[in-house]
Image 1 (cartoon, rainbow, N blue to C red):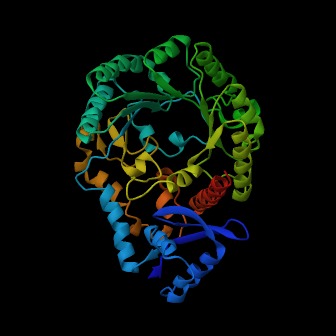
Image 2 (cartoon, rainbow, N blue to C red):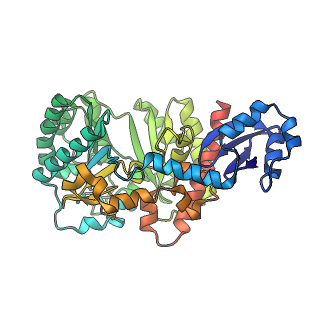
Image 3 (cartoon, rainbow, N blue to C red):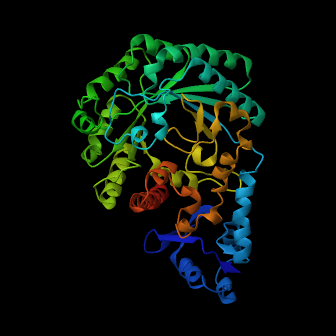
Length: 445
């Protein structure tokens, strides 16, 4: 028996440590002296004398968790088999559809991914046509039916989708007709900055049970440092007006997303949590700018996120972000669950631009085909290449990462938008350290 190269351990206190496998997971709390034995045995076979010091059941558990393996070659085979289990070449894995209703936006947020990275913004078609949207929906629901998926999810995004509200208004009854015909629930989402929202629009969204998602980047001062209009004016008042419209109509938002740069980092504090509590919200999503460098030490960001997360918990509010995704994944079983950083990375998401081009994410430049290909996207070699990168044996640069199988290389867009590794390295540090912090937090709970 050998100790896996993917064996990970973090001291919890003077007597206990948390251990897990960086691909197969199974985090558990064990005595520190057992960890010492395992670390010593890492480069050689386990000393039989060590086994006698523990119950056989302990080693059975370690073997089940892949921390103890029969051979390194067998372990690499087991890892490759994970890929084969969830990524059959002839399989259409599509679960989510996003429609970029508009390539335009009345805002000019300083960190905007859409304008900073997405080259399809420059396509001549700026607004999605009703015809393109309906064909995309048809093709997507064919895929969902073929895949025997138990629910569907269609999202309107952008740019700012409300710039193309007239088309959305026509698509909602079209989707609703499908709701009546298909035997699965069809969820509808909308990502908007709320600036253009009217009561009439909001009433329509409520009528068709549209899940509205919006962003607010802190207090008025913090938000208006980074979320700007084309004239570089602040946007806080416009956003809050949209929040208020939904609240007045009895459909208040239960969460919001906050993107952080050095300009509004000071607003990652208890004040924003108290504001969310005053609005009876139950979740705040806080993400560090995933494309541009943020001129704040990662160690400081980590400590602040931990502080805000702990405070929010006392208020009954969950604070999450891309940085919490690996920890969330760590609680899953890779043999059973198709673990990925996001739907795009897993091959579950298709995003259609007004031009009809299909991407794994609305901010990506990686084209996988056109909207007519969605129901048979598995036949596109570009789709197969996307999935091929999921074989963890191919992620050589991540091999020593303690959360390799649960981060899987991180955000596709961070990689795509950065030619250097500086940004990627900083995000890696954030993900790893926050995962360790969340593990400790879970143990204490």
